[in-house]
Image (cartoon, rainbow, N blue to C red; front, top):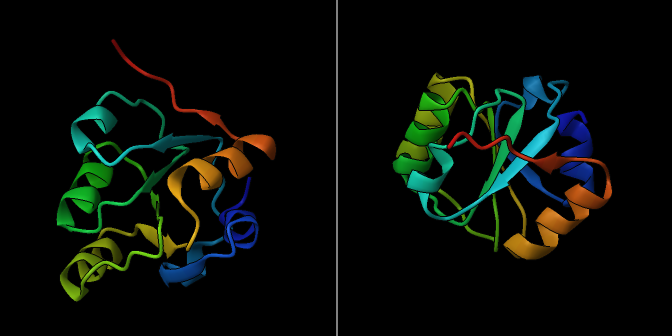
Length: 117
């Protein structure tokens, strides 16, 4: 699924990476606890989270996750957005809660991220 489709489905506002909305994602990981995200394995994963600080971007960078959707209408600060831009991470925000956003993306074909145990 292209990130441009994710944007439309979630009625999201693109914060960084406007020129990269043609990227494809196949999986989603929904979490506010970034240590959980460290178990994911696929660079075609989109992260959905309510955590809006630099820790979310650092985690995404470490795991080669190239797109983040901030839920519940939360907006990251300028430092977080600058870090995302520097690392080529597309960021968006939606007013939807995590459960609803995840359900919509699942219903449209995204699957859960691959977990390494």
